[in-house]
Amino acid sequence: MPSKITFTIWRISWDFIPNFANLRYMRVISNDRCPRCCSGVEESLHVFRECPMTTKVWQLLNLSWVMNNMSQNIWEWLTWVFKRSNNGQCLLFCYALWLIWFSRNQLIHERKNTTKRALVLNIQRHMAEYEGLKVLKNNESISRSYTIQEVILRRKIHFDAAFNSRIFRSASGLVGWYLRGNLMVLKMVIHRNVPSPFAAEAYACLEGTKLGISLRTHSVRLTGDSKTIIKKCQETSTDKSMIGAIIRDIQNKKSDFQELIFQYIHRSENSYAHRLAKNTLEKEDTTYLMGEELKSHAFASVENWPRNPD
Image (cartoon, rainbow, N blue to C red; front, side):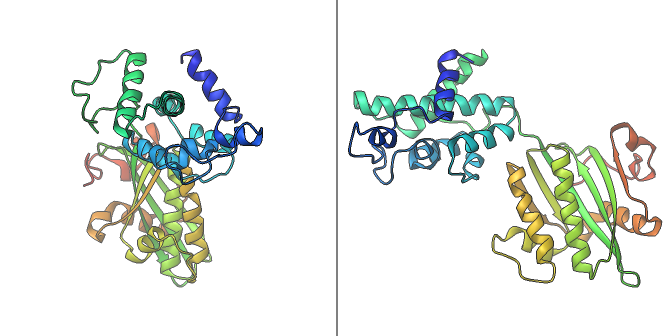
C-alpha cells in the first residue's frame, strides 16, 4: 500500500492522531465534541466506528460487520478486523480509514463537508486506481455488484442428529457445500450422555459452527430441520432451557464469523445430513472427510450427492 496510508494506519492504531479527545487531553482545546454529529466525544473509536457518518460508510462498502466488535481499545478493534478479513477487505478497510480521517480534516480546516456517498465513491475510486481497475462507469450510484474486495467465502452447512434414547447417545451428521452447490466436506460425530432429542439437535448445530470455524470461512449458513434449535440460535437473549448451555456455546462463536446465519429447512430438504447422522449412530464411527478423501466414501458418490442441494 502507499506509504501515506500505512503511516496513517500506524498512527491510528497507536491513537497518535490529533482528534479532539487527544487535543483536549493535551489542553490544546476545551471542546471535544465530534464536529460531524456533535453527539459524542471525538475519540478514535468514535471517528472510525461509532459516528453515524462512519457507520453508514461501512454499510455502503458492505463492511458493516466491522462494527460487530465493541472493544473499547482501538488496537484490539483493528486487530479483530484484520484477523477476520481477506486481503481485499483489508485493503478496502485501510483505504476507508485513511479517507475517513482525510475528510474529517477537510471539514475542520477547509469547512468542506463530504457526503456519505461521495466519501464511499472516493474510497472506491482510490482503491480502483491502486488495483489498476477501471473507474466505475456511473459515479453517481454505488453498484452492489461492483466488488473491489475479494468475494466473501460463503459456505452452507446442513446439520441433523440421530438419537438413541435407550443408551442416551446421539450422532451429528454434517454436510458442507460450496457456494455453487458442490460437495465440500462430510463430518460425523458421536455424542455420549445426551439427555434428549433437543440436546442432540443442539449438539449437531454446535458441531456445524465448529466446522465452519475450522474451514476458516467468513460467512456460513447453518441449516437444520429443528425449528426450536434454529429459533433459539437466532435469538440474542440468554436461553434458560435445559439446552441453554449448548445454545450459549453456539452464540459465543458468532464473533468468529463475519456472517453466521441460522436457517430452518423442511425435513425433506435435509435428507443427506439425516442419512449421515443415522448411519453414524448405527456404526458409532466419528469421521471427517474433505478433498480427495470424499471420493472413497460411500455417501459421497455422484449418485448420492447432486451438484445443487437446493
